[in-house]
Length: 265
Image 1: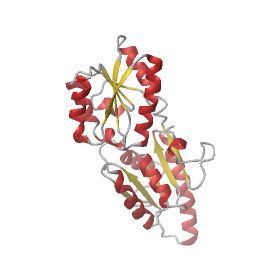
Image 2: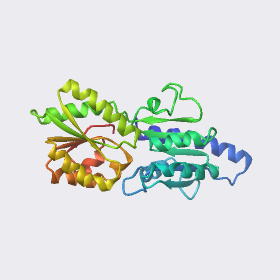
Image 3: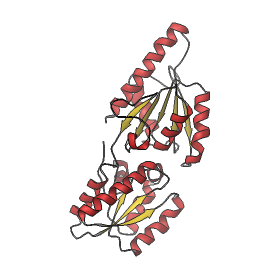
Image 4: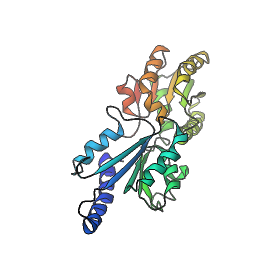
């Protein structure tokens, strides 16, 4: 997956919308709906999207409007937020979250939906197949789940005598849960014992790290979820505090102080 691929896909949707709008009403401005788990910060997906989309001539507030909705890392809020966006009659819906993608799919069968996720979109129930997604939904995956085993392999290469690894995962996130399952399969091949760090809220991180070190975990593999992305600095700091070498699914974890990552660019 490349960043430009996503931008061009959305551009295709909007160019069609613009052409249709110009034929009907010159003044109509295409409207995009963004549904995410966390409010945008420096280097966030929403910020990068706005910047890259503007290079194609789409400037927010000028010739395109974007409606943002965020759940504040509470998946239970997605249905109401999705209904809001559908009610606004946006031309395209975009989400970087699996749970939000599933909610949007249930919320509308007509508005085009574009997702950018880390897990398998077929297993997640978003699409029928990669070649023929079906319905009104399409998008990209960064195949984070399939790379979970490779991250464990790289940890073992980095720490040759490694035998016990903690895996930080969120049971409320389908992609993170899939990475945990994939990690268990890979661990058998690598003769590694896994310790489950099951965390679904940020206030549990401190205690989870203490328990992992008590369980004699010698390293950490972090799965990707909206929660871990939101608190990547805290996670990186805790790995340092507890002297746990860690591997992450994205480069911004390393930018926040993490040791290394292996994942899609």
